[in-house]
Amino acid sequence: MAFPTLWRAEVPSAWNDLFQTRRDIDRVFDRFLGGAGTMTGPWVPVVDVRETTDAIEVVAELPGLRLEDVEVNIESNILSISGEKKQEYAEGDAEAEYHLVERRCGRFERSFTLPRTVDANQIAARFESGLLTITLPKAEAAKPRRVEIQAK
Image (cartoon, rainbow, N blue to C red; front, side):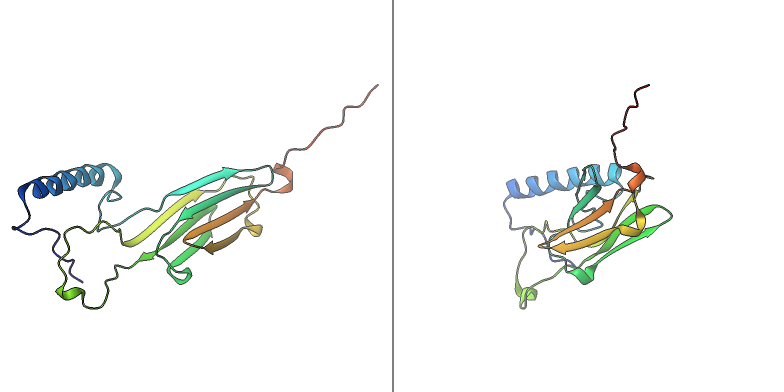
C-alpha cells in the first residue's frame, strides 16, 4: 500500500521547513535505533517493567492493536512480544489529502531475557484497552524469606 502524500508544493515554506526538520530528526533516530525512530517503518512498543515480592510485571503499550494482532512467546529463557500494527484509512481516503502522518505501523518485536528467578511455567498474559500485561511469577526459592535464628 502506498502512503499518502505528506506535503505538497502548495504548503507554505514554513511548513516545508518544519517537515524537513522532522525528517532529519527521524533519520538520526533511525541510524541510532535501527529503524525505531522512523514514523512509517518498524516501531518498538514502550514497556514498563516492575518487580514486586512475588512477581515481575511487564506492561507493553500497544495502542490500536487487537488481541489477534499480538503474540507472546517464551523460548530458551527469552520472553518475546511481537505482532503487527496495520495502517488503516477510512473509506474515501483516496480523495483525502494528508499533510502529516505520525501514527506508526508495521511489524514489531520486543524481547527480554528472563531472570532465573522466574517460574516460566506460571507466566500469564492479559490484554485490555491497548495494554498487554505479562505477569512473571517468581519461583518459590527466589522469594525472600525470613531465616529463624537459633539460640545456643
